[in-house]
Length: 284
Ligand code: C5P
Image 1 (cartoon, helix red, strand yellow):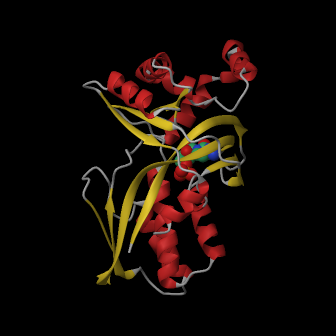
Image 2 (tube, protein in one colour):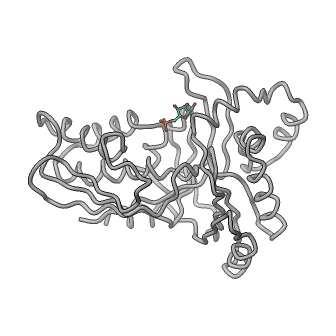
């Protein structure tokens, strides 16, 4: 069985405060995109095995796919560690990019193994929440408002489809670091930044952008360059390092991608994916 694990961008990401559990209270809009990893699930005798062609991708117990498998195995009422299944991960979603690759892999593994081992919906949802704040979103897909840790979800009406230019700088950003920089950046203490964010209408703000750009000015340069290329929106995705630009027309997206590519940046063009397409394509 093969399943697709799609990436996401955050059309907006507002950080509303700190929670008692150490996470941040969020108001974010997730948007699925067509870029995806592929998981191939096979019957294979012996202990659970995870393989990945990309040597940068950990294929051990720390991988969220592995942890998803362990949870589904237990939820199916079986003892010990998962076995008699192997998963091969074909990795296309860049890592440490704010595109949700690891979380999407986890959700895809949960769905596929729940079907295989006959696990019900409630344990799948509980496992998703336990594996990470973004994982529940990937059980849903499309355009979704996320509150609390980003895991209380409200599906939204699909916005118009758009071409998405992704620009990937030659470095990654860890989510934990980005939230730490946000805490130290003191957005509330900088009235100029606060005012600018508060007076912008529409969903197009990422509160992690300023603190991440302060560490990585290259991200700010990419956002400006995408705006100059005519993007209807240019923002960092999630906690970075990927930056996306939205374009109504494919030829404009292609032109922007070509203009922004350089020795230190990779660009790719993909498109938004609505909930119906997500649910159809992610299931097969
Ligand atoms: O849940 P996940 O493991 O994906 O989150 C990674 C890190 O991002 C957390 O350890 C936390 O530091 C930060 N985070 C946060 N608030 C959120 C989501 C993530 O502070 N709502």
